[in-house]
Amino acid sequence: MKKIVLIIMVFLGVAACKTNPFTGQKVLNFYPNSQIFPTAFAQYDEFLGENKVITGTEDAKMITKTGQRIAAAAERWLTANGYPGYLKDYKWEYNLVNDETVNAWCMPGGKIVFYTGILPICNGETGVAVVMGHEVAHALADHGAQRMSAGTLQQLGAVAGNVVIQDEQKRNIFNQAYGIGSQVGVMLPFSRSHETEADRIGLQIMAIAGYNPDEAAELWKRMQANSGGGAPPEFLSTHPSNETRIANLTEWAPLARQEAAKFGVTSFQ
Ligand SMILES: [Zn+2]
Image (cartoon, rainbow, N blue to C red; front, side, top):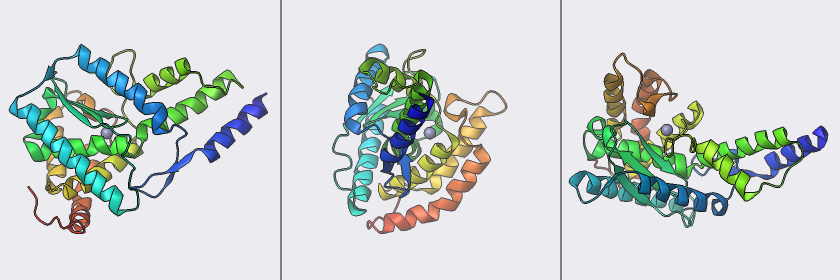
């Protein structure tokens, strides 16, 4: 029985690789959008129903406007690089929630939440674009689906041979992958490599959207100052160390400008 499970796991692993358009690397992901997005959309609506969504204010409008620019930039990049239609199942939504937690997240399919607590660190639209680019990048690169796939393999190992993933199980795996259940909407931190990847992709997208990529490192310096000595804010918890991240972002900013130039974007706000 163990052997069969192993064979199935290897099969899933081989058969279920998907290419990440941004890195060109094959990654383990056997959850198509059609299987994940409906769950994500439902969870998102549930979260919005249980939290105080701010609408109509300047801040709320800024979140929406920045999100739309970032999404449009992602679409341009994907189309130009041979992935037209990559975003066809996405249903972008950008909401500001009244909560002092220093956090923001994007669920699969483009469902974004900013907490008011992160706005002082963003310090304006360009800072919002840094965070938005990063969160959207997690969604574009299917980091959640990859985590679900890894979680499923673990479960397959655990239940020995029960390979038919029922809806109930799928929901549980989704919830585990997103840290939903114990606290709705508090996303589990991504792995360090996923964080670094989201930083790089996010920087590129923000530059194409016309936002100054030099501001990314500045945002993380503010984040570092904000965490000053005490426990790091949630947004940081297992993210790469601030020093590494700031060094990376500083090094990659000129590359992001070059990428933006390919799209005719040469001035940045
Ligand atoms: Zn992240």
